[in-house]
Image (tube, rainbow, N blue to C red; front, side, top):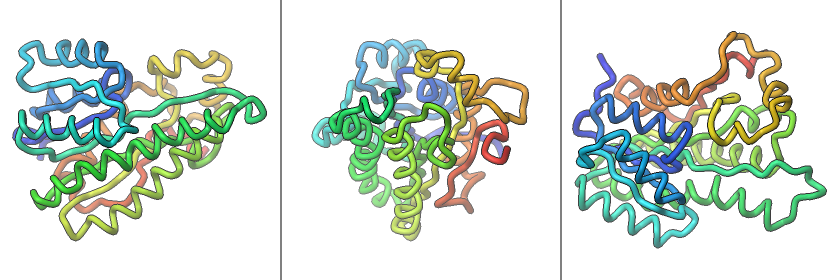
Length: 250
């Protein structure tokens, strides 16, 4: 069996850059139609065109996933163009690297709203579509820091991503009878535009104890997303898959 997504439609939040963009490219190469959602509309559109210059199989939507009306509007447009939604990848997330004594309640709540509430809003909008189809795959992007804590990983970020693990288990139980699979991925340090903003010494600390002598790349996570979105994972739901070069067990 090959990873074949012809006749499947994948929706990816935070699709303009990093892991989201790599995942979109991987789905497209495997035959899927893809909808990219991102707050940065221009970059999102540029990414969609770069992946599929024809514009027929990859579309982009500027969306604030914390606003349910914007999300529902995007979902309606995707259904109008592609007719179905088979896969949802809740990848969008933000970081705010400051010590707790310097972080405001508003800072904390903003991270939770994007990383956790945004995923909830996406699921709420798309689950009815998947229920009607009798099938769907949801993949939530968590993080190694939610499992273990890492140097410099802020409490709001780790807390929001740990919450995604809880949502994953809960929705897997709730939606399994409807033919909907819900899993999560916990990447370790990945070289993306976002992590390049982190001081090099901090990124190095995150990798202390890594068992595999290679940096994590967006493609490493993208391939795991494709596996959990494919028929190859049809006996797997409610798990968090660790993709971190062995850091979790080191």
